[in-house]
Amino acid sequence: MTFPALRRRVAAFFVVLLCLLTVCPGAAQAISTPDIQATAVYLGDPETGLPLYEKNAEEKRYPASTTKIMTALIVLENVDDLEQKVTVTQEDFNGVEADSSKAGFVVGEEVSIMDLLYGLLLPSGNEAANTLARVVAGDVPTFVEKMNARATDLGCTGTHFANPNGLHDDNHYTTAHDLFRITQEAMKNETFCDIVSTAQKNLAPSNKAAEHPNGKNLYLLTTNQLILSRNSPYYYAYATGVKTGHTSQAGYCLVASAEKKGSELISVMLGCEKPQDSAQPLTYDETKKLFDWAYENYQSKTLISQGTEIQEVPIRLSTEANKLMLVAGGDLTATVPKDLTAADFEQSITVKEDLVAPVTKGDKLGTLSLSLNGVTYGSIDLVALNDVSMSEVLYYAYLLENFFSTPLFKLILLVIILLFILYITFYIIRARRKRQKRRQMMRSKYARMEQYERQQHRDDDPRR
Image (tube, one colour):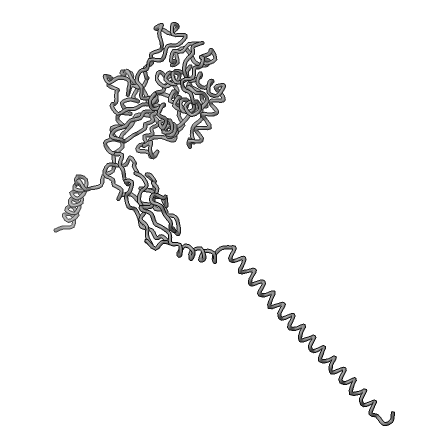
């Protein structure tokens, strides 16, 4: 066989092998990403905040009326009585142009804060935003300061608000990722979730009902076509909210939430267009496409169930056992690719050092985190599987052992050593002085004896 023929056969072999690896069920395949027609996109799991899809997610963009998500969050966090009645004033219409979105409230109308929130989030009422800001903070600028402070608290790094309604201002911007963070926090509030999932709402009669266009109490419709009508081609069965937005500078924006089989998602799209032949902007079809892609490829899974045995660790001061089993203190659930299991993730376990009895069943003794490719998908507490009683004998031995390593013992030992040195020093000095005194006494004795002998010699001298 010639070399060219051999080379062709080898090449053909690798082509066939590549094809087999591509079509084999067991072959690992990367998840293909959709091409979403929006300037900036962030799709994430609200439970963990992890992204499933990103496109220019950190790029600063004008948010338009999706701003009102933050406005509602500030109101809900600062007002205890949502049924409190407030009065709409002329001041609340400052900057609200005739062709901008309004809920329909009129000057002098007495309305509850709850109804103002419906007017804020369903028809995107700009006057409702200003009224709420004034009532909560005293004036709009002070309310905006609260918005910016809260954004910082939530970890937003590319956000600055200039008003509570989203009307265009060059100094009013956010990012798709930041808007996800804000919505993620807002969706923790049940009242917010109830409002943004509402397609239509009849407000309570007010003192100005006769001045409304229909002469009755306000009837509000959501601007979110994903939930407005089941008969609409833009309707999405799994949608649960949230908020639309549009200005000529921002383009069409949509923050949407969905839930399917327990798996929740939040999508943020900024800077979409509206085709000339379409009744609605691309935000709805693109969001539905993104949700469908996510639910086709990802799934909310309980990677570790509560009570699962994780690791056995040594424990001291008990005669019952010298080891203790740690179990998962709760479920660790995350939205992950469907073909992944807990075994595909890296476990990071942290346990308290030098565990000692007594331990009560359920005591938190450590944590477990699951990560993949440097991304942490969640953490849970590790707790004791059972009680472990303490042995008093081992306990006192432990106290004694620990005492010898304490600073107090070291101090006492140092004092004892110093006292011993002082005692030895004193003993040596005292002994030396005794020897010196004895020598002096002996010298004095010898001196007296010599003097006595001389005296005897003088007395015995016959010449005297």
